[in-house]
Image 1 (cartoon, helix red, strand yellow):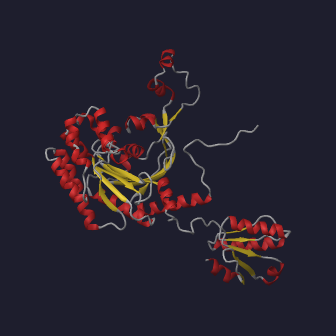
Image 2: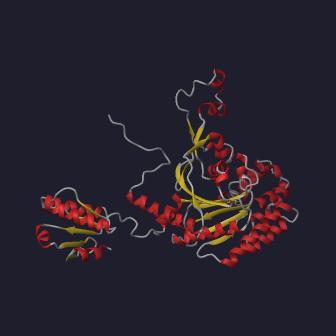
Image 3: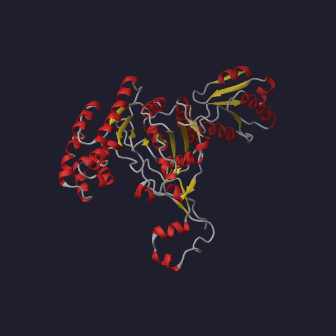
Length: 460
């Protein structure tokens, strides 16, 4: 019995309509990347394991897909190593490569390898798939595209300002109005950890704080206690749980909380600069919001942290994110190379546009006109006309099989309907003799007899 075909969980097939819609999103993003002066690069689908491992924290490392070495990969393992059943020992012996987890770390590797050929500051964009061994759910897949833009080689905060503008430009171009660009700063989180005496538990504290909107204040405090953060420290955090007001109001509250922390106040200064610039320049449809609980990417972000959420009322995880990393390339030997970058979550953006019915109606249109096939003589003439239309950039095709009965004629019409082809040309014996085409509008059912030039004008 033949095996029933399937695909791995967390992956998907895409039909023609879905591919067209995804291409629309990518082309829209790419157009804005180029307007903002970013250059395209591409990196391999897989990297050496030591390039990726240790760059995303323990949880991130667990989500990296490892690639088994080719050949007899168990040959080099000793009996003691095999008997240890140690994941760390065995993995390094049998897997030297891994699928890329994101585009940021491969970009850092690229910069270091090609540093002599790059003009700094280097602005690059990259649109490629990444892989994560995550638990599949709505909006979360194991294979998905990321659309990244980064600037490396500049510490200027104007880069952060431009990235806020870039987010706004892309989502405005997609007609996805009302997104929220959340911003925080790693220095503020470090300052808070310093104030509560938990510098050595920065990651534990921020991971717990990041869950505030998901599990609530009491559960967050409970998790912090479980990580060894003192009651006194948690008490000092209380103002964070009730932080309210606009960007400026929250900044003022943070100044009070962080008054004794030099690094925390530096983070506040940076956020104030970005907010003042954006308030002056103004955004088109997005809004900038301070979110002090935002704590993504702490293993490499050192300054601003970004996360974009869908318009209010749409239940979806983040549709974009990024931040400032002061020494990401340092892990590959190139010190003091500051960078900042953002990413667009293509698949989640797709789901949001679908839910809000924001895709243009013309996207799924593959073929503009279908010529009905009545036999070899008519088909040959029709194919000549199809060729002329194609040369005029009109998407046209001829049905390959001849309709020798009314049933087969109906089949061709149904084919056009199922393919959402808006026009059909009927080119029978009568039309062939007069060189006049019967053009049928499949939506209205109206038919008109037209010459080639009129048909071309109508189809354009």
